[in-house]
Length: 314
Length: 249
Image (tube, rainbow over all chains, first blue to last red; front, side, top):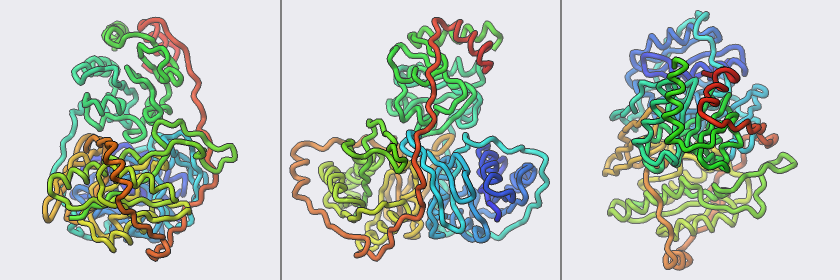
């Protein structure tokens, strides 16, 4: 049976985690469909149709879905779910908000944050901040799940030519209204999908000092992240947070600066390909997961790192 | 207005969790248990609403075995007025918790329900959304700011890439994010007072809810470990290794 992926987008472009979610869908069943619900979002549907692994795109173009609020989206999902083995969305704030609501309306369990498809009804998901992995089986006819994007490769964005089928709106239940958004300064790559991430912790001592991190990040074309301690201390906004209750990242290179390495933080970055830790405390637990550790004062090391990167032309 | 807060008893966030050798779960014997940190933020927010004159009563609801009463008592010691304990020894999954909460909410008719955005044990992040769905109420998840009006609430949400503000009709379900507030500690006099505050006991059977688990956990395993690497002596050596050995810059 087919699998439906709920596209995450901004009415103009598909968001990166959608591509990883399509890969997870195709592992469950070859017949992967994508739902694009939004307002004036035809271009997004066309982009979804071009993904090689996608067999069909459902387009629901209605003002009710302009901001994809869960109160409107969940009944739409339930109206379409019949006949699907599974309905998937990325396990980010979009999917986490929407999927439990849809599952409950369908009287189905929801499986959060799957990182492996064992069989079409059995999945592996992290619990306890990734300190344990649970293999769970669902008996539901349609399974509602969120997908850990970093655990699946991104699907090929081109090569497909799936039909786009216009589908009826389920209307706006009128429970919630979008007021506005405040996007944090993002000339940088998105944290969750960046190739390189440079993160600062409590050791940064202030928000102003994050300038040192940004200078290095600029050289590397990196996203900037932070530990919960740095967010708690008010150095940087919450959407910088990497960890159990923040973002999960798995870049090629993760540089942890002034981060001690609490399990809650490790949960968010330990699947990175190469981990670098810079910390003046030799005993910091972050060194236990780091491929390359540098015991140094970050206020010396960061400017020096910036210079060394400049030397090699970055 | 009456405010409901749900409080979950979880393994304390400082405990290093260990997987049981037989693969059936994690070790909970002789392990320190605490209130889920996001639920503490929920209790705090409810208390602030009461202190601001926007709520009259704060009710803490806990679900699970007998020991959950300790967690409810913690909420009472922080300042909640009374507790409700839905008592069961069975495993509770988010859908069942949402059904039980719905049943209690329909009996008690609070104007606002606050939950943590996620429990740090199963990391599901589902119960608030499911409860809202079953009640047909709006949900304001991952809240970092909450302004309660008569007809609606304006909520700022922590979303990927920044903040989003929504208006939701009352009554509604709110789930808390980190920056909503900083929870208070219970004072000793309040801990003493909390011992006298009432906790009502109910069972899933009395509430007419089938709370049986839906998902079957086949096994729980340790994740693959990560080996510690090497220490470098200088920034120059670090850059050299990253470029010529790891090939990532």
